[in-house]
Image (tube, rainbow, N blue to C red):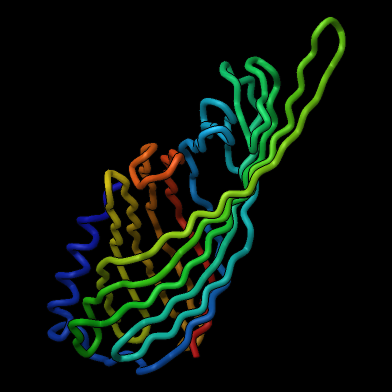
Length: 261
């Protein structure tokens, strides 16, 4: 998913907003939202001597259930603060053709492997509005996000009429600093839109996050939110001096209800 054209369009909209927007947005307001985010989650993870699994090849993961999340943000004339969290559950039932290792427990090839992953996403982002107009801005994003992956697996194998089972679980926390650019605009008092692109790169490892957030307020205090986001890691083994390999992509569309006060 390439969102750079969206960001270019939003930047141009911000540059010309003072000519086309007739009303000034409320100065200093809070938003509280109930949201549902259902991202696709694909990739692989390996830590030497401990874990090695691929979401498609080994686990056959698919979406299982979506948790209800929340967001809280504040927008003033000079900055925007955003906090949020949501969860998504995935489940798989597969017969991997190679051994799979989870937290030092190895599941043999060709055995039945039932797996679950719970992804909990935490967001804390601060946007400094570098260029401001009456109803638009271009800003610098700083922040800190984190993924928490809870992985569990149950393996079943039958040999000579005897069925043996084995189970294991693991928890992986991935902290993610945030830095990038964003642009936003307020079209009258009814429509808020924001786009962003964050990027980190070091020693061959990279992370990116890009998205568009659209909010429509049919009432002055109550609105609807829709967003699309693409996020991913590319961490080859040894790239940042660790024994961990991580290649993960998360694409999602979200919806929610927003209260503005």
